[in-house]
Amino acid sequence: MFDCLEAAAAPRRLHDVTNRGGCALRRVLVPAGCGTPARRALEAPPGRVLGDTGPPSPPPPPRVYKPCFVCSDKSSGYHYGVSSCEGCKGFFRRSIQKNMVYTCPRERNCPIDKVTRNRCQFCRLQKCLRVGMSKEAVRHDRNKRRKEVKEDFGGDELSPELAELVRRVSRAHQETFPSLCQLGKYTTNSSADHRVQLDLGLWDKFSELATKCIIKIVEFAKRLPGFTGLSMADQITLLKAACLDILMLRICTRYTPEQDTMTFSDGLTLTRTQMHNAGFGPLTDLVFAFAGQLLPLQLDDTETGLLSAICLICGDRMELEQPRRVERLQEPLLEALRVYARRRRPRQPQRFPRMLLKITDLRGISTKGAERALTLRTEIPGPMPPLIREMLENPEIFTEGEGQGEPPLPPDPPTAQDSPPGPPKSP
Image (cartoon, rainbow, N blue to C red; front, side, top):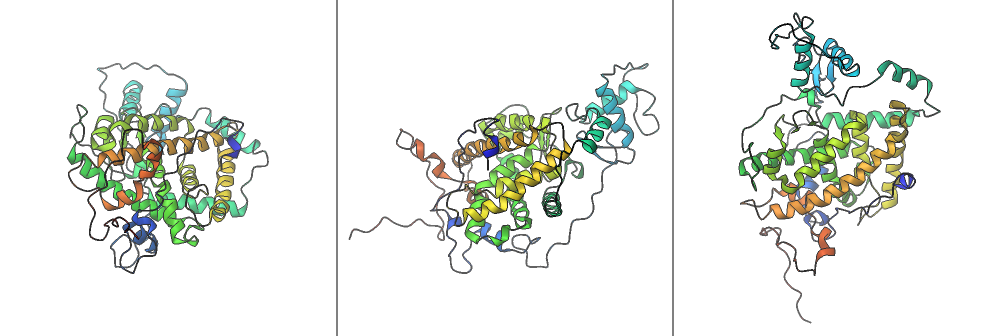
């Protein structure tokens, strides 16, 4: 998959986060009724939630944007980090592009609404920044770039087959991952002032949201062309290996640099300190640094969806029954992302390889995340939620370190259904 990067950078060693053997997810030939949560999620029809015996969920409603966060006028979409109208979007873009310096003739607290927004440029710009508009996200020379897109495709055209693939992947991503402008953000004051080892209230909320996010990632996978045609064992292997990659990529696309916060799918917005206390621990700064590195790429929903699909459908995962078949599914995804990224930013030829390098970075974070999942089990009072445990845990990542004075951590207390076998009997 990474052959195209050889000239750009020597890829670091990729750690596979597939749990080989021993895990309940690998016991695919179990009797009826003994399947794991992940397997039941895969076997459910698209749109069906775990435990739901009713008809499939209806398709999501069309996107309805919140009012402009700056002036409360009708929003035209999500611009520079917040829901905003065309007027405030254009004002913010021009102000940042031209490095405008404004002054306030009053007390620097002028009310800004759709009637008064043009009366004080200083207060309007300050409110743009206050509600979360991002300077980094401003698209410079927009008209010039539109002209470049028309004149400089260089033969990179999406074939009808690739265009349909892009459409389906983009739709799968959007229907399983609401954009920031669709969420009603809310915050919590829980352990916001200083870092602690673990805030159990935040952990309970985070683990609940993480379980829902994993179910959405399973739903995303089932909507990808060709994925459900793979064997159940290979579907589980791929999901287990890439789940943390996609989870991290998704949360990092909801990073707001001005407030240094992350927003989850229900709108819960946590600061860096709260993320640490919710269970991320030493992983926190690494995740926030990765989120900051994503900002210059300015990924849209389609690119994020394609990148997630490439993370998932990857033939180099261990224990695949049909790795070549998985590689054949990944090849058009790589080509679709290459052409789409080239058409979107024709003067940035290094953008596509930089996206693929982010997959390498994600795998490194996944390794640290699996390590954190193991240490977290010693800090929480009860067992790890079953779906998180099955999808994210992988003790075999640490086999290289065994025998060096630090034995692996003990597993959660086994249940009757999940008890490990006893020692082999002597012949």
